Image (cartoon, rainbow, N blue to C red):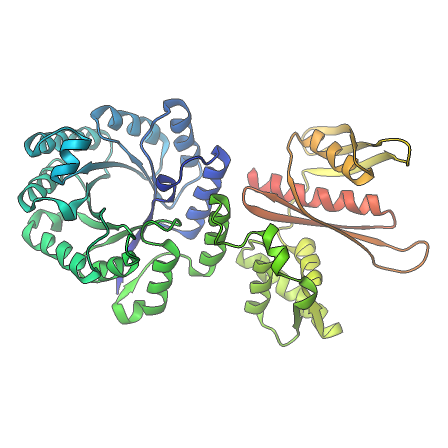
Length: 464
């Protein structure tokens, strides 16, 4: 069984993301266990280097790969950014076709060989793992491509990637092209060989699968649609890998959930977000019963928008079984409450001490909230809002110093009578993920505050 490395270049293909959005995408890719997380060349030296160093502090298993652009100065920037990475890689990406060399780098073939040699040598002097990517390799002259690849390997490249930037070759053609290169260039036997395919004609996934089956070791993927799809390639290996003799180290159980989260961050309109999901998904129509297994429960929690790990999924399922044994049928709303009550339980950073709410039909509602914060003691916030609940939530935001998107807020009576218990469920969205908290009290405002703090504590804990 051949183990295929899966490198992801989503962050190289999507511009305009905020610092936090990029951090969250990296976190999700690390959870998925991709072999390498590829980043674009350093353009804004201050912010880009800060970003690479930030993710280097928590990326443990994946290689952090930074492009060096098209100059020796770019190699210096990449090395500086990767100084704290546990598994750094400098990526030299240069055109090798006649048009690409002349119009992008303004160089003829002999000068391009010199540039590749110089950049790889410089990167290798400070970083053990150096990758050379032959951009538009399928349009290159055979001898030129051979000379450039040999030069890169001779100067210390540990990784060579062949790119079909045009995306015009048929899958079997591209697989044969790469296989011929490995045969004609003996130096490729000394390094890892990767492929990158554009999806111009919708055949990138097929080309990648055929190529790694025959000769390549690594496939470059993306959550976007313009190259090999990370989700589609992973599903192909999962479903057909045994027959093709292929496997990956990806965590298939978390694949769909993570792809959905990253797609939501990227603003992919083909992926149903929680906001428009409400228009298509009526919770009252979804009912589970005691015959449903953990997979069915997990599928519904994902539809509700949650990203649960295996431990929390098991906790939710156990509570579901207890409830299902008592009443046979469990609705999506009841499952929502179970998730809020038992999933991702964390030590509370903030605890409610007291609250004073002023409201009426001739005054603007205001709230004075006092909390106990771990390692800080009592903290207090005062805010006004559109009603008592809004004012209370704004006061908590003032204390925490953060605004969290309120995804959903539900209140209902648990018991009957004047002293009825009120139950509140709050869902907050942060960094592309959904966090929920629940609270119960004879005072519905108190229940709402406890629910809101429950969700906030989960966000604070995970960020820490």
